[in-house]
Amino acid sequence: ADPGFDQTVEEDKLVTFDGSKSTDNVGIINYTWTFIDVTPQTLISKNPTYIFQTPGIYTITLNVTDAAGNSGIRQVTITVLDITSPRAEAGSDREVEKNTLVMFDASQSSDNVGILSYVWTFTDGTPQILYGPKPTYVFKSPGTYTITLNVTDAAGNSHTDAMSITVLDIPVWRELWFWLILASTATVIPTVLFGIKYYRNFQKEREAHHREEEFIRDVTRREKKKKEIEEKYKLPPIRDSPTMQNLLEKLGLKKER
Image 1: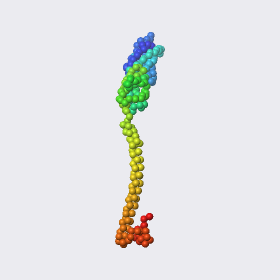
Image 2: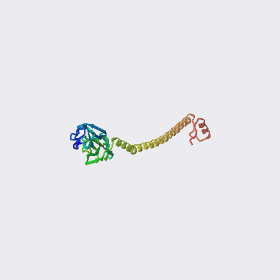
Image 3: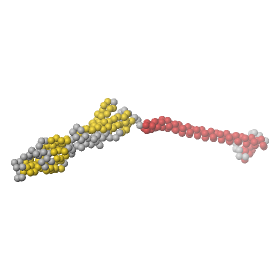
C-alpha cells in the first residue's frame, strides 16, 4: 500500500487521495481508505475524493487487497487548515455615567473552532488596551469613546468590530433632584416653618386685638347708654348710690368693676 505523501489542505476544499503508487505482483483489486471525521468514514477507490469541513489533523489508513486476499496497510496524514475568520461582536452602543464601572461583553463573538484572544482598544487620554471577553473599565471624563474589539483564533484569523460608549456627566435628573432637595431643605422648609410661626403669632395678636376692640366697644356702648339715661331722667352723674345701682341693674347696665 502506498497512500502518497502527507498533505496540507484548506478546510472546505476537495481533497483527492492517491493510492496509485500501491503495487502487487498480480494486481490490487480493492482500495479502502478509513479515517475519523467526527464519525468513522470509509472510501472505496484508488483515487477517492473528500471534503474536510473541520480544521485539524487526520490520520488516513489505506488498505489494499489482491485477488488472493493478501493485503497491505499504510497511513498518511492530512492537515486541514482553518481559513475561516472569527466573527467579532463588541455589543451595542451604550450610555453610562462617568466614574461608573463598565463591563464590555464579547460573548456573542464566534468562530468555527474557537476564539483564542480578545483585545479591546480605545483612547481615554492615552491609548488603552483591555484583554478578555468581559473586561471592565471606569471612564472618568465625559465624552464619546470608540471601542474596537479584535478577536483572533488559533490559526491567526481575526476580525474586528467597533462600538461607542457615551460617558455622561452628572445626570440632569439627579442634578435637578439635588437642587430641589437642597432648595426644599435650605429654603422651603425654613420658610414654611417661619410662615407657620408668623401665622400663629398673627392669629394670637389678631384675637387679642379683637378682644380689645370688643372690650372698647362694650365700654363705649355702656357709657353711651348711661349718658342717655342720665340725660333722660335728669339723674346726677354720681352712680355709686344703691338706688342708682339698682336702676342700672334693672336696665341691664351693671356698674363697672
